[in-house]
Amino acid sequence: MMEGMCMRWVVVSLLLFYAVLGVKTAWSQQGKSQSGEKSTPDALSFQKDVFPIIKRNCLPCHAEDNFNPSELTLDSYDKLMAGGKHGVPVVGGKSQESILVGKLGENPPFGKRMPMDPRKKRGEINTRRLSDEEIKIITDWIDQGAKNN
Image 1 (cartoon, one colour):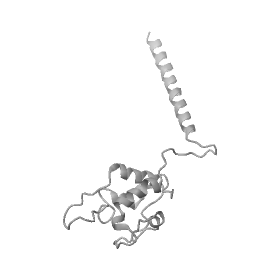
Image 2: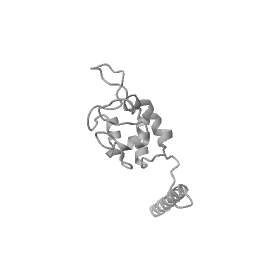
Image 3: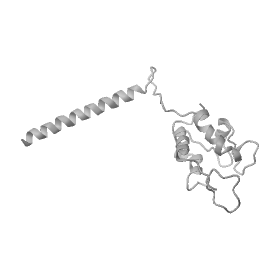
Image 4: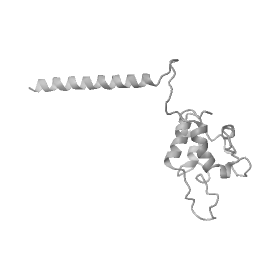
């Protein structure tokens, strides 16, 4: 009886293994184009996904016509990638090495956490923050290569 149960367990395990392997193989093939390159159905766009967040939250201070101590202008992809006084804020494919992501977090690499509230009174705590979803969009876009798309 024990041998029969062990054999059933082995057979069930093998069937599950091959079923998962088959699904994984089919799923990985589904994301490939005819040229063999992997296409990401959830690829993020700078223009459609990232720039609206920047426009809403960052341009009040980081527009070309505004003075800001970092000398970082975020009016366009090219200006973002040109960087400012602290260097280029985005390292394509490496969100955790990107200054932009660091400045959105609890412990920024320098200065204060962004975005600042332009209406904030001196001495008050800045409560304006990007949502977790907005930060994830920026982080994922950087991890996907930070393309100008």
